[in-house]
Length: 308
Image 1 (cartoon, rainbow, N blue to C red):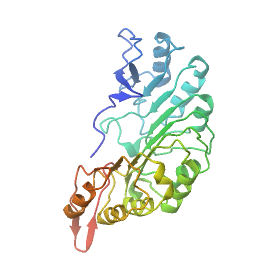
Image 2 (tube, rainbow, N blue to C red; image 1 turned 60 degrees about the vertical axis):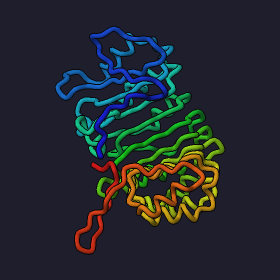
Image 3 (cartoon, one colour; image 1 turned 90 degrees about the vertical axis):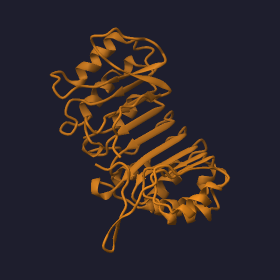
Image 4 (cartoon, helix red, strand yellow; image 1 turned 180 degrees about the horizontal axis):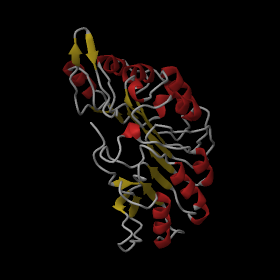
């Protein structure tokens, strides 16, 4: 599976592609997506300036940044700098998505990202940050008093990102979603690292934990099935990864999952027998997109949903 469609909803709003040649729609129910084509001569900073020249800057609450020219060559730092420079003009901006690109625009593991602590410092009232792409992504330890939702989508998340998050503070966090990916595309780290991360970030309001697209999905499931902090969650999302019967048995023998409302194991390698047992649990278990293992001699290959 690849990311084949641009985002259609974000921050509970309908996404509209920004076109400088069309009138600006001030409706509070839409969020604009700013994106360049490969052959555009302008730069994203200029497109942002064009957009903000039309928008009601004092009311703008959400914004999406798509392709910024050649994202496989130039990183997001210039885009981030343009947003940081306009921060004082955007007092109500609460949701940002940087990197909304399909695979045709740029494969997720080829998106060159940037450094995000300056952006978080510039927008202390930001409530949602979504980042796509882990290549050259830099996140230093930070403290943010209002961030409620953090999503980092990648084909391979470097352990330095998880280490920085494990030293950060987000007291209002409700939704934490990380796509771990595979070591083929930059994943590093282990369960012990994510134990430290959860211990730091499982604030009382955390209700959704997503450790998605992970080649270590079995190890994560074995740990989380016995993790006391999971008891406060409503949703545990291990989808897009490679969970097998090992994950299923851990869940079936759970001691900490009783308060869950939903467990997502979509894109899985779980046997029919254990699927039936999982579906009988007293909370919703999502088991869509069943995969078949590829075997070459003695080697078995399992794939995460989003890699390159």
